Image 1 (spheres, one colour):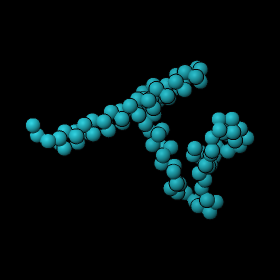
Image 2: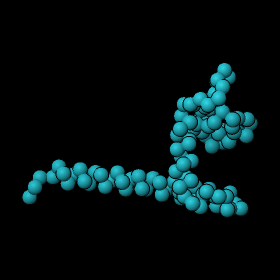
Image 3: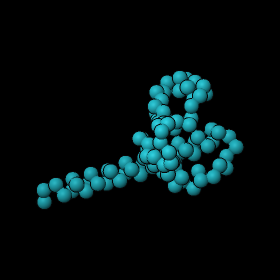
Image 4: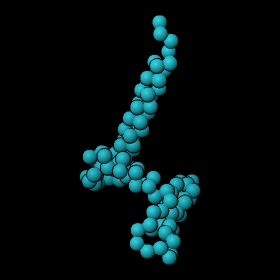
Amino acid sequence: MWADGAYTGAVLTEAAHRLGLRLDLVRRSDDSRGFTVLPRRWVVERTFAWLMRSRWLARDYERRSDTSEAFVLWSMTMVMSRRLARHATRRQQQRRKLAPAA
């Protein structure tokens, strides 16, 4: 799992240990100044953009963290199901093109 270099400390390492995750921290080099493109950072930013397409996640309406987690899971389920449906439709169209004419 990739994490931003700002998220370091005992809490993060303990959570990773308990969940059995391997963390790769993406850090800026000490000599860089201003904006620099970081490796794998775009993956995190793209995922956040996908999540923010769900209007419910644009604001934090929930009081309980498990409800917020459920909405994040639901949003990612919608993203992945749309992607899988789009992929399946393309495969069906390709099969129709390849099928011999009757």
